[in-house]
Length: 275
Image (cartoon, rainbow, N blue to C red; front, side, top):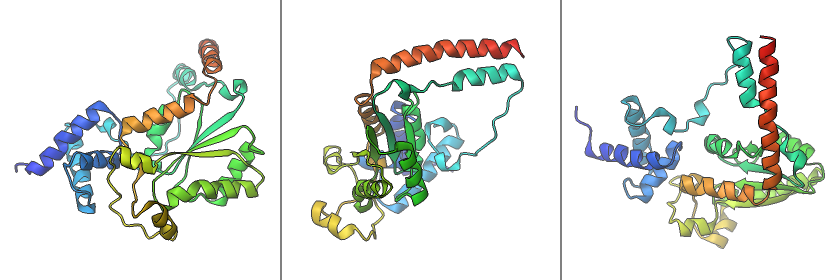
């Protein structure tokens, strides 16, 4: 049976979007399609996009690796065929402590777990810890962070979350709860902001919020709610890298990475000698 023209257009436009920037989550692709006026911003059209992307991957039109599906990744045990294979894995995974040569410490905190794979990929060369929490983190997570940060002096958290009542209140909540445990790091919300919403003409979240913080938020910003996923993927990645690099001693980082590469070679030689 012939595919509907609307579905085919979704697939064609999605392919064009993903061929320029990938991987992306289904939600990111959906918001880009909304921005291009390919689909309306409704729950039913989101499902239509999700279904179309499944069809496109099953038939081979869109490569599977172009879609980030973080929540469905299996957690498997690492195993190797022999010591030679392990040596190669060790070479790839060996990392020097970059913070030994940095004057300040930096972490990135992300509200959306679905975007974590994209953030991990962008942060992999910098040694920056990514902390992912859906909504308000529990106290155990906050305590673990406070123990990492100690007093918080010289520590900066870059926070990425939705532009909605909870997203705008999150920095205050994190700051207050960490302070209760004696840690006072600098916490900055990097995205999403009202300026982003206007600058990139971002579509609103189709799900109406019932957040108890909504009243104060609406009084300050108006009745608007936008997901971080709506920000174009290339803009999000570029901003993440820019914010990280301007807070690191890049010369010291490069020196550590050069030393790391030499030590990787020595590690492989040592492991192969006993294999």
